[in-house]
Image 1 (cartoon, rainbow, N blue to C red):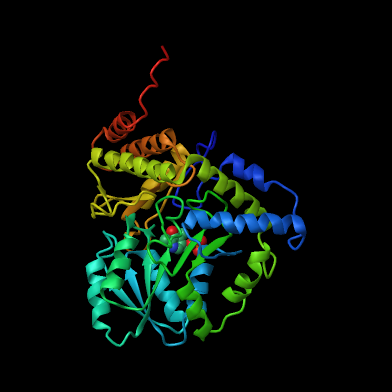
Image 2 (tube, protein in one colour):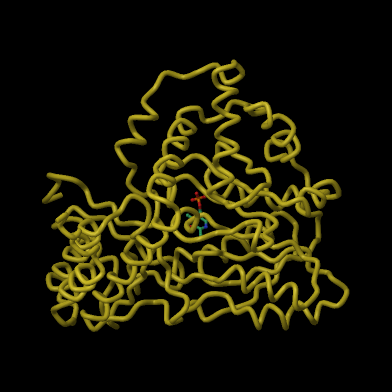
Length: 397
Ligand SMILES: *Cc1c(COP(=O)(O)O)cnc(C)c1O
């Protein structure tokens, strides 16, 4: 590898860079996870994590990747043969659908063109046809990390209500939580799952599941086998500040610090920062004369941008050149996007100059890889960042 000095630019949509503050917070001796110090810490943490989901309902924390929380969502609320409707926005929706099939559920997909978020009208129309309420859950990927398209969860809620359908609303917020607004209670979400390694700026290894009273009621009747993932055991013991089995103590120290950092910045400011860096990225893409994979004007992700490669140019060859020359990791294209797109992550611990540095590496990489493009993408992003900067504070008289 040619260039490994300085900081590696980890511009993938998870795992994202971990702030030094969080690394330091995790660098502590372990505690007895049933002892009084831990239980006091745990009680505060269970309360604080709810503020990130904007919920009064419980948030369950598993030592698992986000995928584990998906499995927990299914096994706790559904029974063999139950129908689930997955809005197929991209690769993560496909994985969710495939999991449903493996678990003995009957998944149906509501397709999209993979260039946009989910369509509320299509959802409403499909649910209206299901007059006998066979569909037990609607699965929505809030931020489709593979394509860089967002689905408006509040629109999905309105579609379900307009169809007067009782299905549970399950939301994959793995790459959206703490990068874009998620209002669990206000939007009537029943299960929202997330992971530690994306917007929350933590290492991988911990998942989160917010559960509504309706989801808990469903769990009383659900018949899929469950043990490790049983919500009941978690919900019974979490109020005392601890867990039914050994929790990821070090990651929980990090979580406490991450939540403090998010509130110091202010959640609205966190979301605005993501929107701004995402807009700067899109201006660069336009400046290069390239296209974002997402073509839905309302659907551009604040967390990640997938960039379509011009025909005849392989995105992974380009990514390799960028890694070897500029010590930067860009996200690969998944499934239908394999070789055809690369992804620029701009979520989590990111700022103006980080994203401008990343875009500079992309612009130079396009040149090196002989990809036809126009100059001036980085200049367009710089102009936008400068234009939207805080005005100089007026001098005191
Ligand atoms: C990263 C991601 C996942 C998978 O999460 P893991 O932590 O790798 O299990 C699922 N859905 C979305 C939208 C993601 O971004």
